[in-house]
Amino acid sequence: MAAQETAETARVDTWIWSVRLLKTRSQATAACRAGHVRVNGERVKPAHAVRPGDEVRLRHEGRDRVVIVTRIVRKRVGAPVAAECLVDNSPPPPPRELLAAAPRRERGAGRPTKRERRELDRLRGEGRGR
Image 1 (cartoon, rainbow, N blue to C red):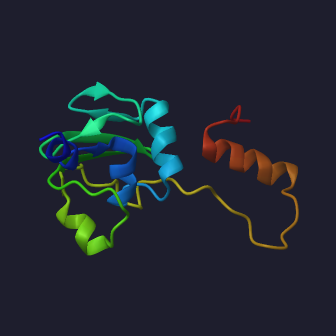
Image 2 (cartoon, rainbow, N blue to C red):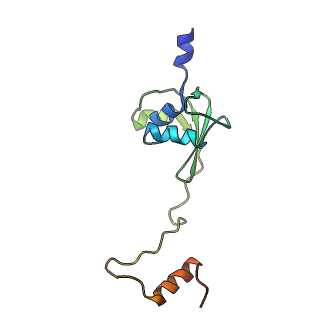
Image 3 (cartoon, rainbow, N blue to C red):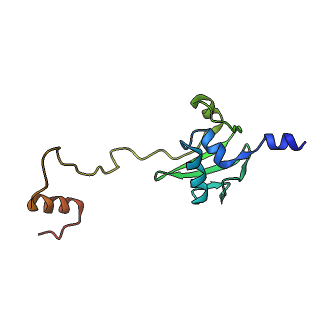
């Protein structure tokens, strides 16, 4: 009976890595230790057991991922199989247009002049408005 019980659980860091929410297991472990992983609303350590039906919240790269565990896997699986192991209830990522791109100078343009630097500062909202 104990063997059947352990077959239905897995470490949260291993499961996050197995279903490809993070690239490496060490990233998953670090996210748990930093408090970026919650299971059913509680912060968890990397060795916390997850079961089917648990809600896992992961904060990664400024985005919240909310997934429901539907199947337990302990080894990394392919993307089609990983998609079957969870139900993704995450909010959609922000559109790329809303992410402000840093202004870039053309390659080989050299350092900005004092006037150009002041204009760039004004665009960024950092200037004094001279």
